[in-house]
Image 1 (cartoon, rainbow, N blue to C red):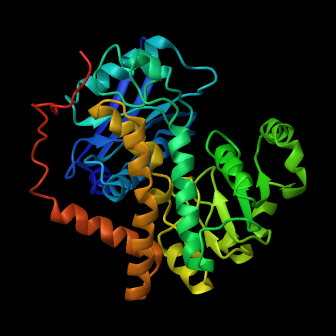
Image 2 (image 1 turned 90 degrees about the vertical axis):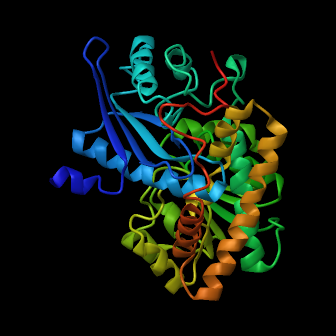
Length: 368
């Protein structure tokens, strides 16, 4: 019974085991009120089964809120594969994973996440129709990091509108944690807007490549250590790496006016949203800010259309302004405001999205 208490919020949890390929995976479906569940599939060398399950449950719940905020007619889900992405990947493993996804008959759509690449799911797509985020040559919308980064920029502009009354980012200072696929693109956009940057990453080569590319702007870029980034004085902190980085320890040293970045689950605990409010730091809820990638991959269900994706991604700005306004009006944290707005949307649409049934896949199923 302890297990069922642990998954009490979730509709379904599937354990996937294929000895012939070494596949060990978990698919967590949190809520399908708004439509079939969707969420990326990450591959990570988890230290234990319990750690992998906790990650799947936590991330799938977040996807329910993220889908509601982005208004994409999907519910929340997540998949995790237990394994080292640098050693354990094989085409056969992903084909086996695709078979498990297919066995859910459209209750769950998935694609790339941390530790996986779009090319991995080309193999999975040979076994199931329910894959999103494929490369362009396989009918997908292409690199979702582009739309994610653009959405974060809109989030930063909305945060700036509240903090200093303008979307102008020139001469403002941003501290960016994580210079990977998304973080580096955000940094590029901020430099183009005339901003100053503090940057950090656990991988020195990533930093070196960025500095080489923008050597002419070197006077506006300062590299700091991975722990130093929390204490630098900046206008907005832009977390683009791992989750849980807004916690008791980091909040104590933060010297910023706002937080807006692409990392998932930035608050270690929901109560940290209240602590940020008390400290006067404006938090842009991460699942709204980083929704550009979700918008892009779910758009594939209707047939790839980049113009439609970018138009919908721009709505991130307006959604955030609604959250900021609601929080101010009700005297609550922006984290609570975002959750409340999403929960109301889910409740209001309980009887509206009945087009989906497990035995009848959505009519916009687009491949074979």
